Image (cartoon, rainbow, N blue to C red; front, side):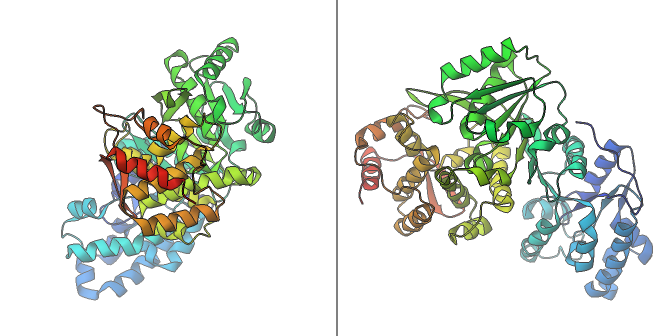
Length: 519
């Protein structure tokens, strides 16, 4: 992807880096400026020039209120007529309503940082970094402000990562109004995640993919949205539903890609829900040993979970996703507007993944979801995607932390396998798996609360009595994540405190599955 040109001047938006002290804003702005061939301006440096002393000394002599007044004047001056296309602001600049208003016409990039990392970098060199506990509380207080003005969020400020992200950040200038960007990081590669309405029509400009586009979609989504993605070299469609996510179907798609003349510098565009994303990603991972795939998720399950993280695969009769590969997407374009055409049952199925993600995240996301009235909008999609991307950044290949994302999935996948992928939608099975996991976690009150949340969205909270409970228990023993002959479960201690790798006695598992069949 090539960076869009940015020019200085009052009429041109600038890239403005914000974030807490120690987030690396100066380093990031210099890296971005170098990538664009311009210079970066650091607001704190301009401020010290205006003050004629250091920020620390001015703070000590005049106090924070006096400092903030001067800072507001200087920063607003820089934003009203940017002296450079790339600016870095001080950590507290966004506390000014006037500054936040001035940021509205610029591309604002938030650099994430943990309290521990920021404290290590800053030490006691800043006026507001004298007490560790107050330092952490200040970050917590400011985070909602940072997030409220950010158009893009970068998870780290390493210069190489910022340089790679610059084309995606500048592409926001051509994105529909309100589009937000997450920069996904993993051991095998980084990629942009755009969240906003009207994105499919801008796919080629936002992703910057060269070569031809080979569309893979299904027979339900294709008639609705295939035309929106523009010209494609081939339009390949599969039947809708989990039953189509097979080895045989993948083989047919691969042969059709070959017959259509797909080359290694072309790319796959996956337009659909989790099934399309999984099978199209698998084909992209294996075709000519790997071609890029752009994910355009059209279901809530896919937008909040499956489109991110690079897991691809197909089902075998022996188990869910038994054949697959890790293949990170080249980009993800999540358009919540596409959810408007989802059948109610399909939209409901996505809420199981929302609840799962909220249980893992805890904090504001759990509080939003547990109220029961959270809409399936861009804010929800963004929050869920950020949660998953943080986990994947720590552990791309399920060697540790990423296993928590399987909460509810061990029993859920077993239910799907036993019922031939036909009785329950994936989200419905995961919802039942969540309830079993909460039973195994010994949290009856939380289980009841989650059951109420699922029921309110029209999801099943009891397992069909015709399903063989013993077969479900046996199927968990064939889970593909089994290690050393043992299947370990993800259990919950509290929202935001989820642990993987827990052994569960077979009799307790059987009891949890049997409980699902009680009315």
